[in-house]
Structure formats: structure tokens, C-alpha cells
Length: 132
Image 1 (cartoon, one colour):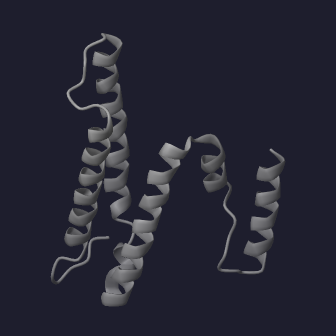
Image 2: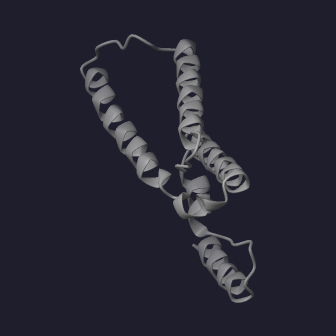
């Protein structure tokens, strides 16, 4: 709690000074609360969003208006992941084996993550429009 209060006070001081750097409590809370395996994808998603935002603004000056359109899509991915987690929990609770397990599932996850990232990049920079 002390860390949270200190970050809020520091953030308000930075906000008052109109600094571009801010100290938000939520990322710190996520880093403290969530296990490393969950925090890394969140970090990577934020990093990809930053890169896409910078590229969009660099290549398309009108992109600033549409920078946050991907939030709805990302929220859908999070909700879909939650639903998939529930659906995967059903056979696990019934002691039914899942087809992909062990080290192979890590590679499958990495390939799917890369494919989704590449698809989002290609869709965002379709010729003539920006949908970030």
C-alpha cells in the first residue's frame, strides 16, 4: 500500500510539472501481483503497441486520430482468452487429456503469438489507411 501511495503522490507531482514521464500504479501492481509468466505477455503486448504507434505516426500523419481503435480488438482477445481458459478447464477437471502438452505447447503458443502480431501489423498498415 505504501508503494502505491508513493507512486500516486509522485505521479501527481509529475503531472503538476507537466512531465512527459509518469508513474502509473497499475503496471507496478500488475508486476507485483501477477506471476512472471503472465506479466511477460502483457509487457510484450505493450511493447508491440508502442512500436506500432511510433511507426504509424512516423509513416502516416493522420494516424493520431485512430491510434486507439485497436483497444476494442485487444479487449476481445483478452475476453476470448478468458473464455478459452474456462473451456480448457472443463476437460482438465474431468481428467481428460489435452492433445498438446509439454514443451511442444510452448512452441505452438509462440508461433500463434507471432502470427497474430504479424497479422495485426499487416492490417494496421494496409496501403492507403491506418487502423491502429
